[in-house]
Amino acid sequence: MSDCLFCKIINKTIPSTAVYEDEFVYAFKDINPVAPVHVLIVPKQHIANVNDIDASNAKYLIDIHLAAKKITEELGIKDSGYRLINNCGSDGGQTVFHLHYHLIGGKNLGLNLL
Ligand code: 5GP
Ligand code: ZN
View 1 (tube, helix red, strand yellow):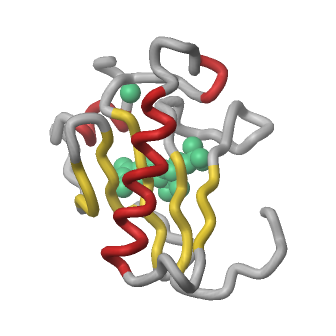
View 2 (view 1 turned 90 degrees about the vertical axis):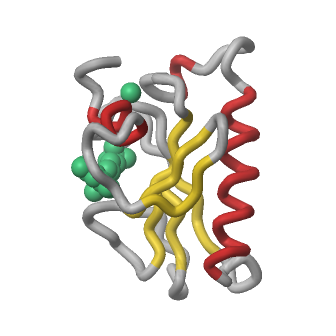
């Protein structure tokens, strides 16, 4: 999608710091990290958010989780733990309307959900 920020990051029109990439997903460092590890994992296909997941594209959810596991192994936080967060829609705090999961860790995040 030509006017989507994350599509531009995926096709490298806009630079980012890559953390992981395969045929289906791209993962890069969040520009405004909230923890020592803050990575965004996105499907290479433009999907606006969870509301647009259906049987034709649901496989991306598996790909994103498999990528998350690989990234946490690579970064050494798999066993200490981490959080995988999706914000959906404006009340959910979504500001970029290309499906993405925040992989956050590298410190004890406590029990707060916000
Ligand atoms: P949301 O609020 O939609 O769940 O998350 C969007 C995230 O994208 C935010 O954490 C924000 O810091 C990040 N972000 C926004 N613009 C850019 C950018 O140009 N590059 C990178 N790497 N991250 C961005
Ligand atoms: Zn997009």
